Every structure is written in C-alpha cells, then in structure tokens.
Amino acid sequence: MRAYYFDSLPGDQRLPHDSTHPVSEETLKAIGVLYSRIPIDAAGQWEQKINAIASERAYRNHDIISISKAGLGDEFESKMKMFYEEHMHEDEEIRYILEGSGFFDVRENPTDAWIRIHLDAGDMIVLPSGIYHRFTLDMGNKTRTMRLFKDEPKWKAHARGDETDVNPYRLEYLKSFPGMR
Ligand code: KMT
Ligand code: NI
Image (cartoon, rainbow, N blue to C red; front, side):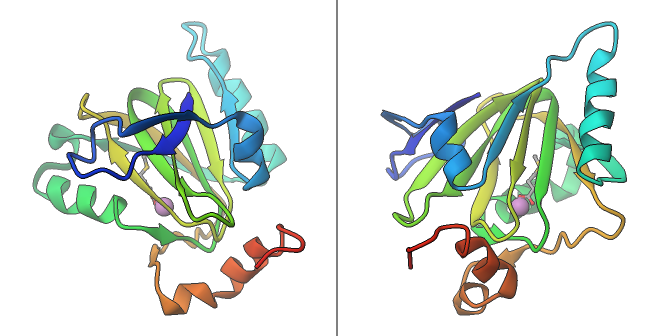
C-alpha cells in the first residue's frame, strides 16, 4: 500500500498521478479508511485471517470480481467508467486484493482533496459508509478482488451530487468529524 495526494493533472487515470506528497496510515484512519496487510501465503493462512475479520465485522458473504478485459469482456469499458465516477455507498466497501493492483481514490475531509491509495495483492481496505471515492486499475490493467459484504449489501453507488450531500449515511459519516462542516 502506498498513499499520497493525487496531483489532479490531466492524463490517463491509470497513471500514478503522484503529487509526491505522501499520506500516512494515521491520516487515512482519521477519515475512517482502514488498511490491513494480509499477505497471500502458499499455506492459505490468509483465508483464515480473512474469515476472522469477516466474522468480527459481521460480513457474512463475499464474492470475487476479476476486473480486466478478459474478466469483464464487453462490460470492461463501462465498468471502468462507472468505478471511476465519484460516488458513495450506504455500506462499508471492503476489498481484499488477490491479484494485480489498482487505485482507490478517497476524498479527504474537510479539504475535499483526493488521496490516492495504491493497493496490490495482500492489501485489504475498508472504506466507511458515506465517504466519497472512486476506483481505477493502474497500468497493469488487471485485478482480482474479493468483496466482502453483509447479508443484504447496500452496494448501490450514489454518484456525488446534491442528493448525496444530504444522504443520511453521508451525514452520519460527517458526524465522525466533530467540530467540522
Ligand atoms: C466500488 O464500488 O467502488 C468498487 O466496487 C470498485 C471496484 S472493486 C476493486
Ligand atoms: Ni465504491
């Protein structure tokens, strides 16, 4: 994992866009973004660790998505576009990278700056419900990712706009920043 401020310059979204200003794990934690490293070992211990986290946080289900031209076929371009549109969810977004790599961009609060988080195999991230974010592959062009979720995931992506600014889950998220707004 490596996190830094996005440079906001034009160019392919899959390029690093590294402003050279790093972001620490503490800064991520302060906006509710949790990171864990669970190396994918040949003995398969990673699976037990994932299961332990899943039961601790009451994630009862998971699926695996292959984001690549081969994995998504005709849907590839539209999915890439969709993932990169700024959005929020009413549930946590929990992702564990099994293969490949990619970028999660999250909005810092209250600056609204983009923080870019590069993840590769063995990296797990939890984005809190209500945080504005987006995802893109990097130049490697593929990732296989486990998505963990509760029984009935509220996975709908709500594109950022006037409505999301007053979404109850968004407002709840903003409450975790006492004295702000
Ligand atoms: C989302 O909702 O932003 C995603 O599922 C991103 C793709 S998972 C690597
Ligand atoms: Ni999302």
